[in-house]
Image 1 (cartoon, rainbow, N blue to C red):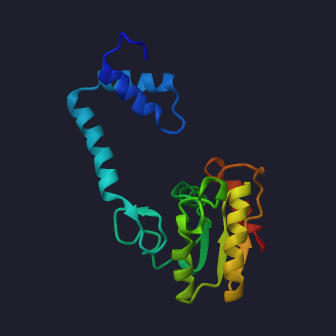
Image 2: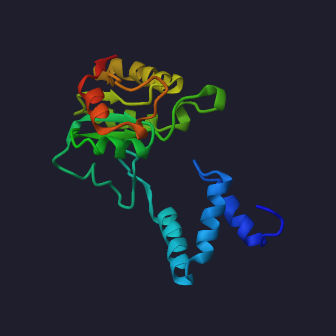
Image 3: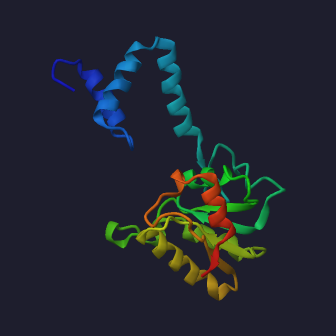
Length: 200
């Protein structure tokens, strides 16, 4: 924003611009919109940010985001706990849940292996996945990482750890473009990819 703008407004726009997918023009529009809101609405908006950051944490079982000890999926007795769908982020859980066709549970890695960026197995939630599987009762693990170099490397790494344990490991039969992102896939494509998954 130009120098003639008030400094707090410039800082607010810069904070919005630091969010993924928000360019500076969009950030400026958001900053000006906040200025047009009444004080109560701004306080509610700020409180929602604080509450989310303070109260939302990882589910102790699947690592998805929740405000409870166990997320609603893990605590649902109707879900098949013998099938675990491994995804990169909580956004991917939301994408699969939109299909309304998957009845297993999830495991959220919170990242993908990328040694060039310093993301090694200890930086993502692989240890927690192995602990879950070590408890028994898991029949299949579906590797549902994105079809990228990092996604494929992560899937192969985890499959290598699980195969000696006698666990069936499958990979989504991607009806998705290579380099595509699960979050943007439509429900039918995701369902077909899940239905036609392959052994690894």
